Amino acid sequence: MSKVVAIQMDPLDGIDIDADSTFALALEAQSRGHTLYHFLPQDLALYHQRVTALARPLAVRREKGNHFSLGTAETIDLALLDVVLMRQDPPFDMAYITATHLLEHVHPDTLVVNDPAHVRNAPEKLFVTHFPELMPPTLITSDQGRIMEFRNEHKDIIVKPLFGNGGAGVFHIRPDDENLNALLEMFTGIYREPIIIQKYLPAVREGDKRIILVDGKAVGGVNRVPMEGEARSNLHVGGSALKTGLTKREQEICDAIGPALKERGLIFVGIDVIGDYLTEINVTSPTGIQEIDRFNGISIEGMIWDAIESRLDTVEE
Image (cartoon, rainbow, N blue to C red; front, side, top):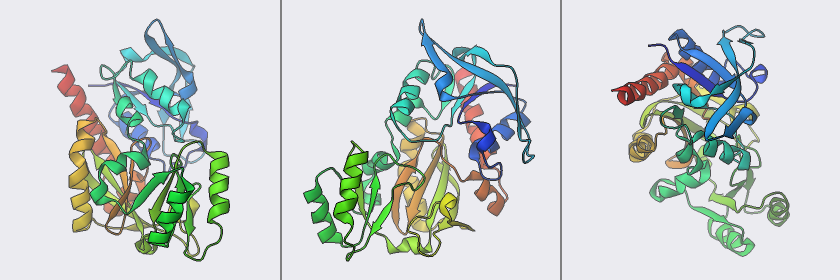
């Protein structure tokens, strides 16, 4: 049956329709006959215990430069919808956290994907620490002395902001690099949170694999290889996307975390694996499904909507 779906995301005009995962999800929903609305996070409001959004009817099409149409804005009661896709990009800041609190008022009667409370409780670089046996050596601290001890132990390290995204602010500090103190001073001036320091994994030169899990099950991955002279493998900073399968170790990682994801209502998740190690669990606005679709001839967006519709059917029963 047709459902009413609102997509909470950033402005549509700036997206890359050949790479954006939310665009693929919207196309799939539309092809299934679902009615679509679009709104920005700042369009949310809570009044008399009703969560509303100033939203616009949405139509999408795979035409570059003409990929969407928006109707007249109207105030919609999110409690009357079937699904809200929470798909705005991080940073995972207080605005993001506030949006999860507001959407928690309508979930699960209106299915929010991913579950807003568990999105709030599962920041990418913190949720992964609940699986220490899968991680590389990692330190989270504001204590410069502890950071120096970690560097003395592991020599080659990665330093990054705890709530960063998209590879922003990620630094590779080699054993002979003299810039660590200055970098920590800069981080302290910008961020109030602790920072995260990890042992550098040379296997990143062979790729940082993004693996997508749908309702706790691995459905495919893409290998992202950093360009020469770059420590980051993110595609938007020049990383190359390569076709890949899952190794035995990667399947073990997915099997280990899958039940926790499913239990928490984290239907669409992207994890990052370098070599034998899990480095991040992305639950806010994962990407990568279009690249994997093209390499493998599959439809991950279809799998995600199958999982969403299955949950809706279970609630209705």
